[in-house]
Image (cartoon, rainbow, N blue to C red; front, side):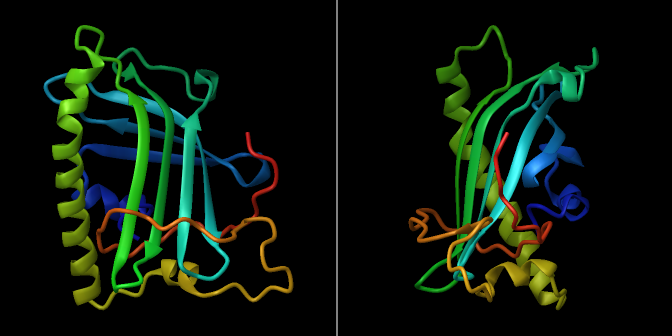
Length: 193
C-alpha cells in the first residue's frame, strides 16, 4: 500500500512523485513519474512496469524498465532521466515481518557529475526512503486501515501451480523493511515488452 498506492505515497515520499499509470499490452503498464533532485531540476521518467505475485502468497515482484520517450514526450521544464531497470521484491521474512529488496540502474542525467559521485548518495537516500516507508506502514497498521494488498499474500487457488503471472520458487530477499502494499491485483503476465 505504501509503495504502489501513489495517492498515499505522495503524502510521505516527496522525492519520487506525480505517478501516472497507463495500461499496456500483455499485463504491462506504462508509468510516468517525476523525481525531485534538489538542487537540480526535476527529473521525469517513462517506464514499462509489471507486477507479479509469488504463487505461495509469500510476496510480490515488480519490474520496470526504460520505455520509449514517444509514450510520454519530454517536457522542456523537466530533465528526462533513464530508468534502465528497477526490480523490487517484497516478501514475507521467515523470521517475521517483511523484506523489501530493490535493485536499480537509473541515470538521473546530471551531465557534469560522475556516476560514482551520484552513487555515494544512494545509500543515504535509500535509508531515508526506508525510514519513511516504515513510518507510513506502521501508521496505516495503527489506524487499522485494511489494505487491498493483503490479497497478494494469500496462496493462489489454482490447479496450475506456476502459471502465467505467478512466480515459482523465489530467491530470498536480502534487506529488511516492514511494508504493507496495495496495487493492481492483475497477475496475468504473458509476453513482456
